[in-house]
Picture 1 (tube, helix red, strand yellow):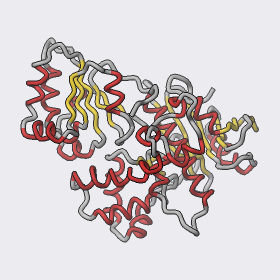
Picture 2 (tube, helix red, strand yellow; picture 1 turned 60 degrees about the vertical axis):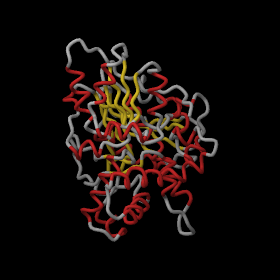
Picture 3 (cartoon, rainbow, N blue to C red; picture 1 turned 135 degrees about the vertical axis):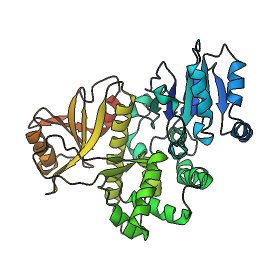
Length: 385
């Protein structure tokens, strides 16, 4: 897999680089650090050697004193290696940079291993952003296949996408023994696809899956630890209204969502397309936040009366309210949530993203074609210009 230019800029110090499988961590580290000393824990023989003797890393590093960077791929497979890395980073005179990649943080959390005592920052590699594709971005294709580099660069993207969830079930869930009943977890994944872009009510999901609510809460935590999805909390700063309590949930990629979402005679295509579009915007906003050096957070806003805004981005450089509509024309009702939010927070930049072709400004609200917005989005620039 050959990646186009990524917006991700690495720290100068040692760092963890997490990200779902297929987002290009290994390819990126190979390109960014071609002369680095590498330890690939996905390799079966290497895994056996380091699983038996984690201190082997010390011997390898000491044997290559001129190596400026040391990359350890899929470090969660042998968490004990981190104690050795910690020891090496504390040595006087050491100037090596350690890059520790992983596709799951669950095993590291579960075993309570040393996370280098704050000596390494934590970064995430996301699916492609539209601007990273250098003119190859196609909105319709992105909504259908997503933007996971493994899929985008595949000669058979749809077949690769179909096997993606199976790969995670087999290699992550089964291998680590995270759940006892894989069938129940598979049903949960399908049910969660119906919650993509919606407020998450674990009691309702538990009823659909026919499992306990605590089991569902544990399953949601697994999705987050495996970096397959995340929750978006409610924006509550200085609120003057009664707000909904539940977060929203998104799978990390629109294509992965589509591969999990059941479709049949009772499922309206425009409903699925709308959820995919909202998720595509969500993953771009999340990547924009993750790749920046300043602090921003993502929220959603929904009153108990049902007035809502899909995304609120709040941070050091401003506050933006973003609504996403899978429609080619802007109607007055589409602006209701943005107007209400701006009434409460007048300093907000309000943006409506839609499937039309014209940039409009209606009552101070920017109405922008969604494809244009995504292609212009860059971590080095403001969210909207």
